[in-house]
Image 1: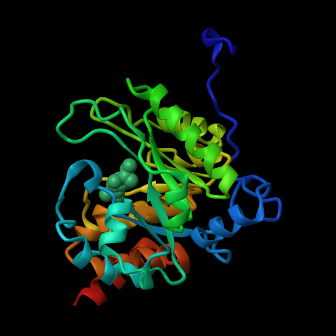
Image 2: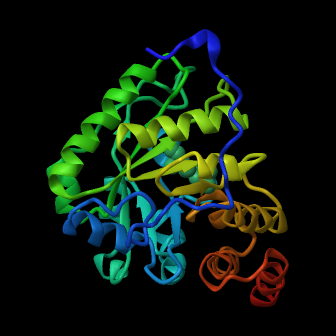
Length: 293
Ligand code: R5P
């Protein structure tokens, strides 16, 4: 085992020297088979290499949260502008018409096990079977990973199980870095958690934005998409999207900053243009204001 007493400061991330793509547009995924690559290509646009996911899986532990009281009313108007629907099987099958999925992907939430009524949210289990993920045409399975918490070992078992079954079925796994009330949100923590998740074998990692984010993305050998977090003023959220992509993120997986916005359609269109059209956050904010008029 590596020597815990002699961990040297990590400096050599070389963010300006990107990892060799090895002929496939999704970082670190060139050595997978055809099925896995088609699903990754449903998620990550082969031209931009990027993705815009809309996260609306909050109800699986929060119940009806603000903006998601009625998924059937909130999500369909946003559908034309996103690449991936990130939700639970219950929300997807009950509230999203299959026709809305034309040309789009599903990131299926596959872990659960606690609710806001519990103090410690870190004890989860795999709550969706691989056959169900295949039946729902999931392009990836999403699972929370609680590094440094009581539920760490359990959540590593969960992600390992999903990766084993997902690799056999050609379905990628997205490991979601969990941050709880008492869990760290430092750059060092995100470097650790994202790298661990990638080394478990996840094809995609979801993580929060932080200072020196380019060291987090450079140290993680597979693509990172950022979570939005709590609702911010629209310009701040757009700045976060732009900065994260500039610093190596491969996409945005945002929820509240879109569906809780004053103008959700204007917001999702502005975020989309940052992700796929390469506009700046200032330009995106102008776009947001024009569309919401
Ligand atoms: C985390 O496990 C879930 O995917 C969250 O429900 C999601 O990341 C929240 O999205 P946001 O923070 O952008 O509202």
